[in-house]
Image (tube, rainbow, N blue to C red; front, side):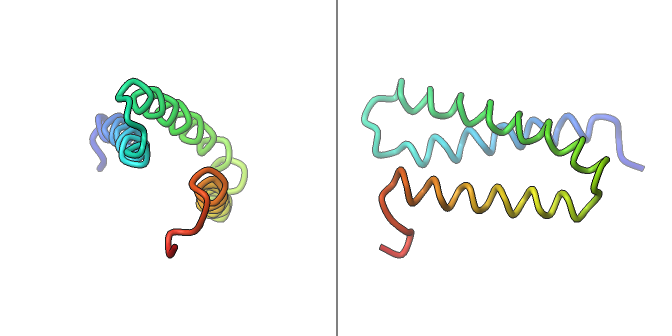
Length: 90
């Protein structure tokens, strides 16, 4: 049986992971304020995607969650190409 605190810990961990990824991707920004703003936007985006997973799971189940995950991976790849100007191999 899963403890009642587990979903809250998972959600908090996801938000923290989103902020840390944004903070590390914002390393080229010299100003810590701009990096913090980027991290806060990432927290909001993570919360939004987290909120979308509930209706997707209810309506489509695991295949829908897999599709949402694939969509997120594609969006990250496109954002990296658009905003960072290339692929990771370059």
